[in-house]
Length: 209
View 1 (cartoon, rainbow, N blue to C red):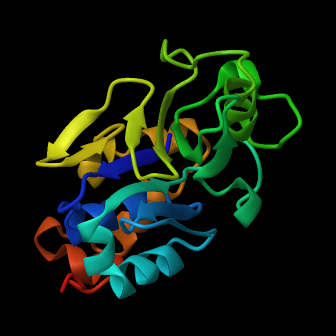
View 2: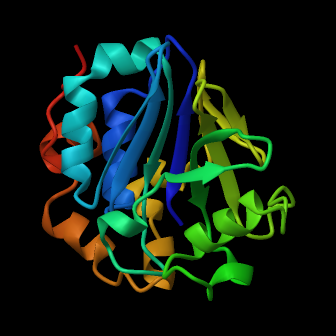
């Protein structure tokens, strides 16, 4: 399933939301953000490494535009190569980084193990527009810091949009079962998940400056 987050300059998701997104989609995370001069990209198959990076650069990231992705693996191994976002280059010379939420059913077979990478490859080559939502949701950030969604996004807070909100309530994390993550809810119960004590259960402190 995954989740895509975009943040306009001056805005960021709160740490609680980022922690929930990460817990619900634990198979790698990445961010592409623009500091007003250039685009920075950081990806890691270990979500905690990405959260630590955001923590270390919070103010700079918040001042710019950002594209963040947390992955729930369905096609391809959990590794850096399959961690979103992915680079793209259009025939008109535009470059940037792009993330996917969902399953790109038409692109489960191709040059890459990741259906997302296959779909983005086809899109940049003009073979599809990916705007009908059939293959999931896609969002990008250009090398100049412009954020665009190819499909409809959901507003989370002022200046912050997401591809979905199913991660907001762990009691409703049923999708991982459908995708083969049979232990997701059992692990939460075993750890004594408490909505009123989110940071303690995720192991992530309130690290927002």
